[in-house]
Picture 1: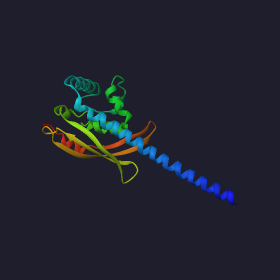
Picture 2: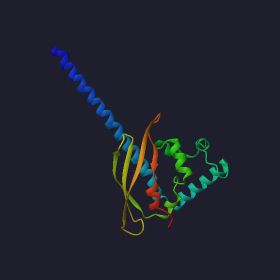
Picture 3: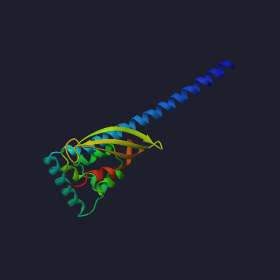
Picture 4: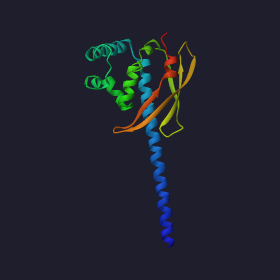
Length: 181
């Protein structure tokens, strides 16, 4: 009888450890996906004039293929040569890519006016439920040299067939900070 109790206690402890480890791994995976997205998104600050020109030409060509004002992600996904758009599939759901493109946040053409901006991801923390996060970002050189601005970007994660992805990113505070000069 005593052996059964000891085995039961060991099994329960083992299950608790496995449960805690799996939750921690998801949290770490989420943070990696979020950090990867933010680094990729903020890379737009570093695009050269040539990078912007090439991206704009590519977008113009795709819009001609799709029709004047039509944005249809399925048709965009069928454009096999669009490696720039496909790269976002590693961190965002297809629906979120479509929303960001439709809202003119991906790419964010305003960012080409902010070449001197530097950023640092200060903190990524879980909020309220298990799939919501807040990323604290610090920007320097936004309006003039050495000024600092801090914002919070809210993100929701989801499980997909390809792994964890961002299903929603709230870029409103970011958009308000980086409006056209």
